[in-house]
Amino acid sequence: MKQTKVLQLAMVLGMGLFVVACGGEGGGEGPIVPPPQAPAEWADKHMPAGWWTDAAKLEAGRKLYVGETNPDVNCGSCHGKDGKPTKAGARDFRVGERMKLYSDSVWAWRIADGVPNTKMKGWKSKLSDEDVWKLVLFEASFGMPGKRWDTEKKSWIDAASVSAAPEPAGK
Ligand code: HEC
Image (tube, rainbow, N blue to C red; front, top):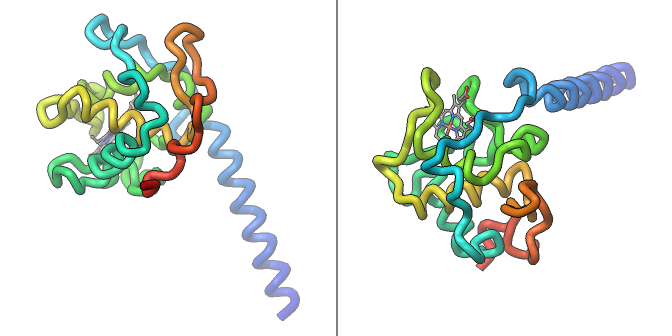
C-alpha cells in the first residue's frame, strides 16, 4: 500500500515536470518564436479604449469563444473552453511566454484572417471588428490575466484595474 502511494506520488511529480518542460517549449507547439508582423490593415488597430478593464466586454468575448453567441463561431471546439487545446496544434493561449510576443494587433489579425495552410481559418466573414476585439480580450485572460497591450511601450503591462480581467462571470 505504502509503496503504491510512493509510486503514485512519483508519477504525479513526473507528470508535473513533464508539463513544466513542455510549457517551456510552448506547450508542445514547437519553439516559442515571435509571430510575423500584422499587415498594414491591422498594424494600427488596437483594443478599443477602456475595454481592457471592461468586464462586460470580456464576458461577451467568452460567449463568442464558447459558441454561445453564434454556434458557427466556436473557438473552444479547438482551443478548449478553458484554454486547454482539444485539437492537436491549436494555439494554447495559456502559454503566456508565447502569447506575450504577439501585439494585440497580431492577435486580432490572426483571428480575422487565420493562419494559411492550417486548421485556423479566418473568421472575419462571421465576426465584426468589435467581435474580434472581444475575442482578443478573452484570449488574453488565459495567458496574461490583468495585462493590457501598451501601444507606446509596445509590450504587455498591468491593466490599470485588474478587477475585471480574470473573472468572466463577474457581474
Ligand atoms: C478547427 C479548429 C480551430 C478553431 C475552430 C479555431 N482555431 Fe484558432 N487555431 C487553430 C490552430 C490549429 C492554430 C495554430 C495555427 C498555426 O499552426 O499557426 C490556431 C491558432 C490561433 C491563433 C494564433 C495564431 C498564430 O499566429 O499563432 C489565434 C489567435 C487563434 N487561433 C484564435 C482563434 C479564435 C479567436 C477562434 C474562434 C473565432 C479560433 N481560433 C477557432 C485551430 C482552430
